[in-house]
Amino acid sequence: MKKEQELKDIVKARYAKIAEQGKAENAASCCGATTPSNKIYNIMMDDYSETQGYIEDADLGLGCGLPTQFAKIKKGDTVIDLGSGAGNDCFVARHETGVEGKVIGIDFTPIMIEKARINAEKLGYNNVEFREGDIDAMPISNDVADVVVSNCVLNLVPNKQKVIEEIHRVLKPGGHFSISDIVLVGDLPDALKEDAEMYAGCVAGAIQKPAYLQMIINQGFQNVTLQKEKPITIPDDILVKYLSEEEVKTFNKGATGIFSVTVYAEKEGTTSEKPKVKLSEISENTACNPNTGCC
Figure: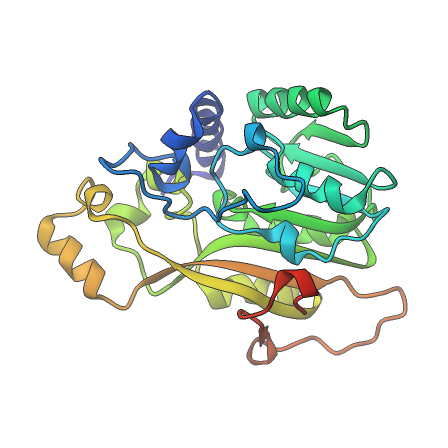
């Protein structure tokens, strides 16, 4: 696989192109990044259309979950959205914070920032702002956020541990995050794992589910909860671009699983002396109703 900066450049270039595509084109591919298949597949994204605060113009169809529905955002909260794109999750979060709160979106693609700002201005949302920057080095001060959300973005960052550290840094003591992302159980074929487009497409950059959760635990987060999990199936007409027909059959029958997960965790409070949670102790609350708070 390519070096860290090369991967970042590939993702930035690809998502700049995605910003100029329509939602239907993005929905036809893995996170909008691969060549569209010959049918429209909603491969990863969840349906936002019934979500309060949803703005269709800001939805590029690039997510893999509904983290804002699970994030327990309250009126007056300060919320940070990592990889904010055209602003979709920020505007949903703003509905929850109300005018009393504040929402900050971070994205490293200039055209995405531009689109998000235009959308916010059209809506008259003075308490939603967008900052250009990397989520592994956020342009945010320490202890700012009550809540951090992100939708199918951490898997695109080569240094995922640094992102987890940054989330911990920007959260207030006692704050929490709810993040949707792609993880693996089992190994991808090398042809998928080593392909830059599949990396930009949220697949090749995904890591093993236990390793993902362990990074969160190692950072000292408490009450780590798996709020939602769903399997992701890559259509055969995308797989055949990378694998032979026989390899496609083997992959589809194999033990490798690609999953969208939504993970919740809390930063320890100022006087917290809770012992570090163990991986085996993580709660799986995948059947919960997001409208009741989930955790």
